[in-house]
Length: 318
Image (cartoon, rainbow, N blue to C red; front, side, top):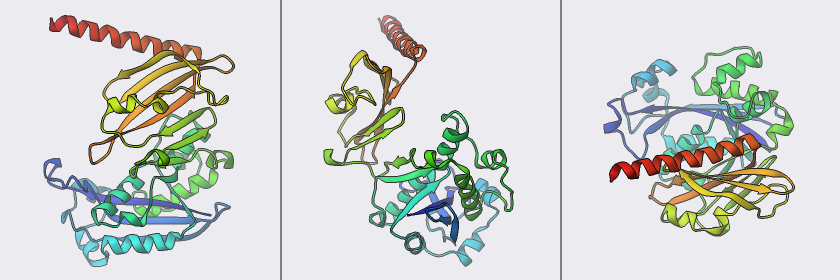
């Protein structure tokens, strides 16, 4: 297996959000990538400029950050569909995508869908979020640092300017090479732009300390919360259903929480995050994670605070 560490540069509507194409809010104008072998050694690189076809003028921020102009893109760039086909051929069949954060893989697929070639990249896609892995390996697992911060922290020599696709891919690869193998091999991510459609496609992943479940699509949040598999609570180690101490409750429009207790392994907190598809349907990403007694108290307090606010709101409406 090879690691494909890639980075994208993209443009957006220069005339404001009101005039953007909703199907492709960010148009890719450059792909850069570095290929690592199974030993995480750099063996090849790839770079291509892409001719813009949706936004024919560069947004001022894009122009400032990447130091390119439209004339260069039109002169040296190639059509997107051709660039992606060449890129995927270069990646090879046995490849694992890696990126700094989770946005590049999303925008790659969104651009591919716009041009009618999404079938070339089947999802949901397993990949490595190097930004997350750096946090797990070197910090608290929750913080999300900039690429330049990680490069400085790991004392990687700065040989190129940041904010060009190939340079950022190279720096991301250098960070990946410094991370512990047990972290890289364990904490992979799953991109769900192409989310599960049917029950047999649903995804269950067990990580050290927590479980993740990605559901199929439903017509509404109410249907999601009526599904027994989604609302079940299970101990990550026992793999047995355990009793909820606090049933699922909504905190905002997208998140639901619960609190459960395993008599052998202790407290577990559950979180369901609702995700909307482009067609307006809904699927859920559920995590069940071990937690401390202090965090369990925080969840209880959160629920009570939400109940208090709802009561006050209803009283005010009367």
